[in-house]
Image (tube, one colour):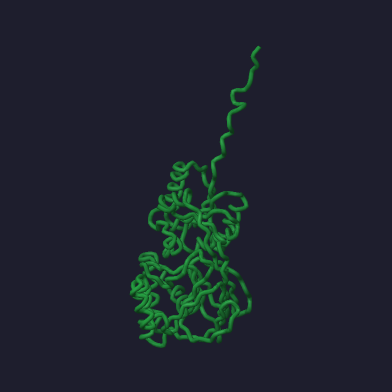
Length: 339
């Protein structure tokens, strides 16, 4: 006599659809369009409805990312500019959870250097949901304030002490909203005539300290700026090193030589063997106006008073000392797959 059995007894159990978290600033324009694009991407790639986590004025992403990681979601997407991306990375560093980026800021330097589209939200979402996973370095930034208090932040892009930070803090918000990163040039032209060099001590990886008179010191995790400007051509996101540019022009001619080096030598001459030979013969890489350094850690100490600090394009007040060290491969990013 035949036995009866459930028709579903041997059927495989359907796997639950993966779910992402979206960390976003609710005060920014385009939120409705972003939500619509996310719903469409979820359907295209077979993901469940995402968890939406709003940033706050005093917390632009870190605790939201930590909450998403605690929920064991496989993907956290930062929708915003470099500041939002940096804050989300602070909550994800070392977790092994994948992080996607939907650029929605002014510079979007990290996205540009990773070749994530900055003006195509659906394409950026496709990369976030289905892209390759690439570990990149993070820079840990230890800040000492004039009152001797200390704090730590994360940098993924580039930080500056001196005129670079002053330029960012003096950028016109209305102009920035209209013309984007070009507003920084306007701020630079206004700040440059009033800027004064200052004395600073730097020490690479515990070596001997050097005293220099500088306009600004930049510590970078990458080297490409908007407009294909190669400020630090050898910087790589995943090489385990930080790259430093010490700018010490003595006058207007010195600033002109720095611009020549960035716009002509780095972008053109260094691209060919003939150009590199020319630079070697003429001493182009040894000019004192702009010195490049590389290592896994650097300490900066302002000799008198304090200087303004910026991290990844956001102003961070003034500091008397700043230390940087590399946390190699600390962040797992979704990037375009190789063609």
